Amino acid sequence: MNETIRDDQLRLLFELDADLNRIQDLDLLLEEVLRGARLTANADAGSIYLLESSQLQIRYSQNETLQKRLPAGERLVYSIFSLDVDNKTIAGYCALKGRALNIPDAYRIPKKSPYSFNPQFDRLGHYETHSILAFPLKTNTGALIGVLQLINARDSEGKIRTFTADDERLVSHFGTSATLALQRAQLTRTMILRMTKMAELRDPKETGPHVNRVAGYATEIYQRWASRHQVPSREADRISDVFRMAAMLHDVGKVGIDDAILKKPGKLEPAEYEVMKTHTNIGASLFEDSLSDFDVMATQVSATHHERWDGTGYPTGLKGQAIPLWGRITAVADVYDALSCHRVYKDAWPEERVLEEIRTQSARQFDPEVVDLFFECLPNLRQIFERYPDV
Ligand code: C2E
Ligand code: SIN
Ligand code: SIN
Ligand code: FE
Ligand code: FE
Image (cartoon, rainbow, N blue to C red; front, side, top):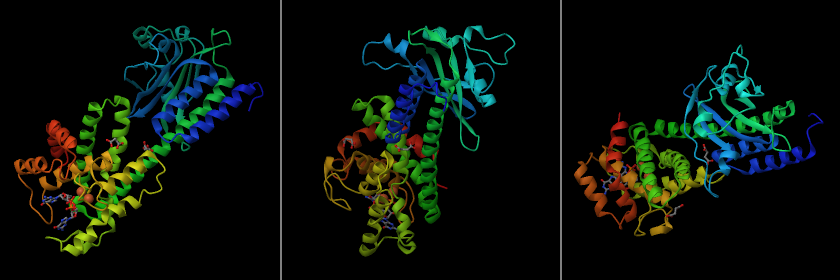
């Protein structure tokens, strides 16, 4: 590395690296990456854009100047927008060409430049962009996944300056961290989809659409719960994302159940039912390393989705609030779906009878609050039911 990089900058870099390794959660991690990149270059503002359906979607934005205009403790609200991958914006051009752009002044870009700056965002935010450093986020195979963009580097007196070659080198380091984090999250997602695929291969009749519907109902109910309990909406969205994956896997432990029982076209004998009940613990054991929020949640969903509010459920007989919220919500979502649909062992019930059963089981099988929330969002649940029909 270049010796003009100051000692304190290097120390900062090592400390941030250590922080990044501790952070599991993707959102927090990318915010830290952006903060770290801004700090090393002393940049006033910055954003991370991620490539989604061939557009650059803004995902994180920080702006010290705008932040200072807000009352203490308030978070900067930035508008959600996406950019085309073309030469109309700096980030778009950076993505298009897959290389870094270092621009001394956004308002003095030579006319003959292949890219241009869109001043609309400045006007909307009452902000003045001058120096810009845009960095493509690329995987080790060269695929573009986003752009990290820093704005208005400042000298030691706070005057806006041009980004230096050192800044470029240091920021590329943060770009690598961001890319690795994104790839790791993508891998988690891919592994989860593979697990649900595996469960589907084992039990194609009941698993495919059922897991999508249950996950849909469960997150819908959770969003209601979160809004009632004043969970900040960003936090609720993040949890919802993780919960969706965990709920999809609520019955993944059924891969460990013998075909003769799993696919029996009729009522289970008591001994067979006892075997069937072990799908809860089998499922939980798949995530017991508990390396991430997702693992913890998936363990709880598998382990507790057949517990009952009154303490008579399985496998443990947990009661009331001792059952994790994720299990209490998935329980209602699972039974709503099981009753509404045809199974090898039962016919579909008419909706009226399904709803009556759920109401009757409030405070018996189910958390009464979750049952309330269930009825509040019933129109949304019906929509999910239509979206994932049985094949
Ligand atoms: P599943 O099909 O996903 O059903 C989930 C839950 O929906 C059941 O958990 C139960 O709480 C509820 N449920 C399903 N059908 C009925 C019903 O006709 N009446 C009522 N009141 N509730 C119903 P449960 O009972 O612990 O079963 C767990 C899993 O065991 C089921 O998942 C299914 O895969 C299997 N299973 C349960 N009973 C039978 C059966 O008689 N025959 C077969 N072949 N499988 C069964
Ligand atoms: C992910 O966001 O894909 C991983 C879930 C987590 O680790 O919290
Ligand atoms: C949670 O389980 O994390 C939410 C709190 C509750 O149990 O109600
Ligand atoms: Fe189950
Ligand atoms: Fe189920």
